Picture 1 (cartoon, helix red, strand yellow):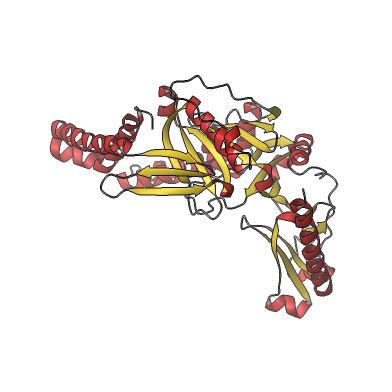
Picture 2 (tube, one colour; picture 1 turned 60 degrees about the vertical axis):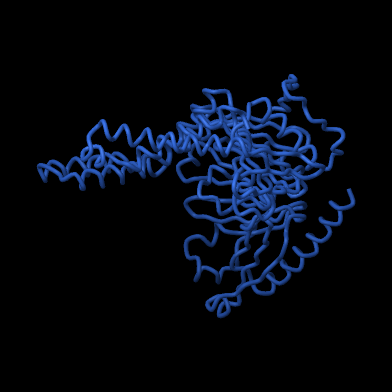
Length: 430
């Protein structure tokens, strides 16, 4: 790792230590002893970071990335690159200030991000990402030589630019959210409560501010995460650049994409905007932070842009010409309001599932990515002779045709199974 890595880890520890000691500790022991405690804890964390840095390294051996770490208990992680799903270059604020970056890998079946290499120089992280993707793409390792230490790294080609989201549209899109509309009402309520009570306790003030922060921070975080969003296409991969305080460059092989999901929030529809998300095979669904998932395809865009991006990810698929028939009329007993807006259909290349009343959603699943097909029936569905057909993918979510006529459901399941087998045979023959 880069020699500055212990300093960055120590700086992160400083924030954690100060937050852990809290202001109550400061009031009890005084500023002097508080500073001593902080210094001792930070020095200890820095020493541990230096020891960890000295005993951590990586080695690319054939089609396998090996990560070595630990002093007393040595551990070696071997990551087969044929299971690689996505590679991400992340630059938190401190890393941006020091010219460093963190490399994160996602593999099939991983419960969390594998082998986060923190920190490398930006040039080294970018070059390593290129090598890993080349090996994972079944290129011969001999064609991807390792760079000599200190040798200049060739600039990475930017690929073909697909779209860049305007930051103005990103800001407006987050203003057109329920949180933004409810915030003035919340402020009025808090002001009225304060005036009626005359004075508040510390606990009441802290609880109110915490609740308001939870409402406000979500759209703010989305703006910070998707700031300067750019989408590039480079051969068989997508490259996503985004972030303001923490910049990210995610690389997703297109053949790993399991589903594409288009969403039309209620307030966005008056401007004709939509949002696109990806589902990638084996990506860590258990990650506590959803920002670690490479699911961003288009944070906000108009119908034309959405159709263009979908056509790049799923060639031959037209977002504005997809079949989706609603459930039979007797399904109104289960869906009195949403029966006409849900539906499902079979396109030439993808399975289509439509859902949502206020927030409309369209899910596209390529036939070659379907892992299993299930038909489920609840108690009321059995009375109404209805069933739901699920198309499961390696990513986990998949899509479902809800409340179909029973005979149509079994026919749809058989057709999905046959199309899935045919598509996989076609893919394996290429």
